[in-house]
Amino acid sequence: MQDLPEDEDARLRLLRALDLLDSPPEPVFDRITRLVARSLGVPIALVSLIDARRQWFKSRYGLALSETPREYSFCARTIMQREPLVIADASTDERFEDNPLVTGGPRIRFYAGVAVRSAEGVALGSLCAIDDRPRELDDDDLRTLTDLADIVSREMQVREALLGRRPAQD
Image (cartoon, rainbow, N blue to C red; front, side, top):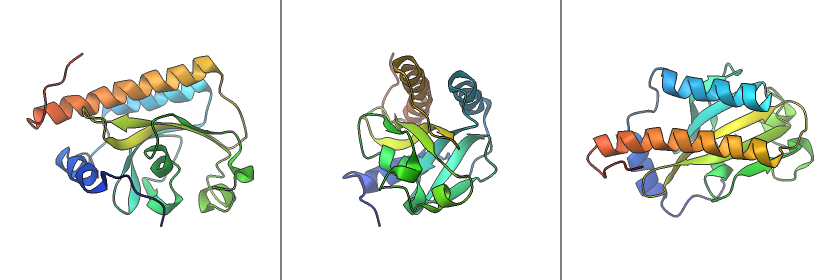
């Protein structure tokens, strides 16, 4: 089992309270994954939420799967850090080279993910871009992904505010 965030219990409670897991698709998230795919020229873009044992996709563009086991999840690593996680070629990265999502379908090579955070900075999941070929992101592309992840975070924070936890502010 991989490392867990220090705030894992509180993180999971908040994730469940937001009532997003296993919910129907929503245009606000689907627009963002389409924008990621078009802007970065990738075939797959996801808004993923990291549950206790799985990664579930609130929005997915270019991928039929609705979830994967957490232990295979690139996004589970993304939520462990403050900076974006960018993997130019997962097949040559020792952390991922034996991962079933790399060795089998969807044959992930490139991954870039930015954590999606609550009002208090708790990482709930990520916005990510995936390609089946190795590649790099330039600074503008990384800023685009980060900006769009901030919009997803803002949507999560608005929902959090509606729970009475904390007012959403700009």
